[in-house]
Length: 266
Image 1 (cartoon, helix red, strand yellow):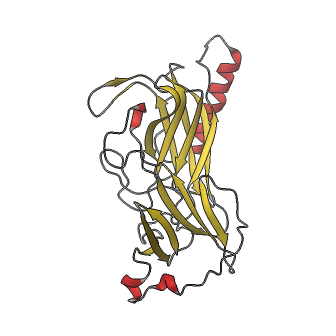
Image 2 (cartoon, helix red, strand yellow; image 1 turned 90 degrees about the vertical axis):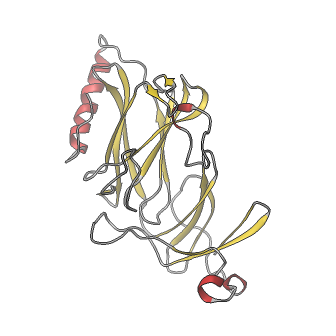
Image 3 (spheres, one colour; image 1 turned 60 degrees about the horizontal axis):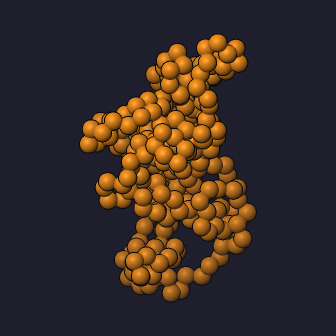
């Protein structure tokens, strides 16, 4: 039972029926909670929240970002509530549609390891643009969906959008949303070049590479959301042997990670 205050009212949400995540398959839908936003009345015709006894103890699980509350159940599984601003306008512009910048509560239930983000940074197009790449896995298995809309939104519950923020970029000081993109079928990889873009109104925006980056994604199934954060790179110097060696090493890592989807631009 999740209890919170919103718009001046107490909200009681009953959630049950799911733990962890299934591995990607077309044969079965991804794990998801059954949800009753009336505190149990809609499902059981009685106010379950009045009689539900809390059996959850102190949290004994791994550290997770944006944590609001967490506990560990007698069966060893963990419950957690996270809160973060998942949906924001891309390319550092102000919010322009409902939901942009909203703070979301995210409920999870799991046992065992969390999803993992592997992230590398280099340059693309012979050093012209800054570049980020990597892979999303869960228990060693790539996380991916099977189809998306033309704009890249997942059309099934296996798909996951990774949200990329950039710090102190050409967009201005502080953290700004750069873009979002899915991990790819079948290897869970992703490639992203920091290049100029046009907004939904046709406004030109500069390349958004920054001093630091953070990459955030909803966990597969009902597992917690996770985040990676790391320092950005300087501009590529073709005369610098260290830069050339780093680029070669990162290109080799990309070839190792990418098994079945399109290669990144070198």
